[in-house]
Image (cartoon, rainbow, N blue to C red; front, side):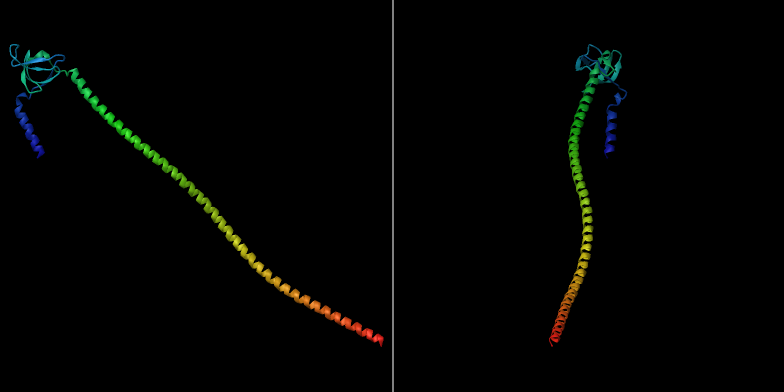
Length: 218
């Protein structure tokens, strides 16, 4: 539907301005204003003024005079020698100034965006530095934990070895204690028997001596 209305509008435009299909655009020469007259002669009355550098549409050329339409749609005659196909420098300068202003605005916008990006980059850099610092800290803790774990494993193995050795020594101590008790018991009985034997022998010797003395007295 939008395309159809566009086509209709273009057709109406062509119908209304069909008489100027072959018209060209020219500029009024710079540094002056020219009169727009109702006819192609100085005797015709002035119906308007056209500023220098203004773009006009050529409708008809009659040698020294040219029929034109100005930017406001007013139609009249101007002297041909005051028209030129060269775009006035002021127009070029104005267009360049507009482009420059647009570019300046764009540069300013890009500069502002760059500043925002710089701020965000600094925030991200600080955040990254903090994460790197934290990562180094965690890595150090991890390495320390590995060392401590290795030490713990070594200590555990040494403890298990010492525990096994202690149990072995305990078992040997028990055996030695039992043997000592047996030996002490044997020594007790042996000493007691020896003492008893000594006493008996002494008693027998004493009794024998007494008999010998009695026999001598008889």
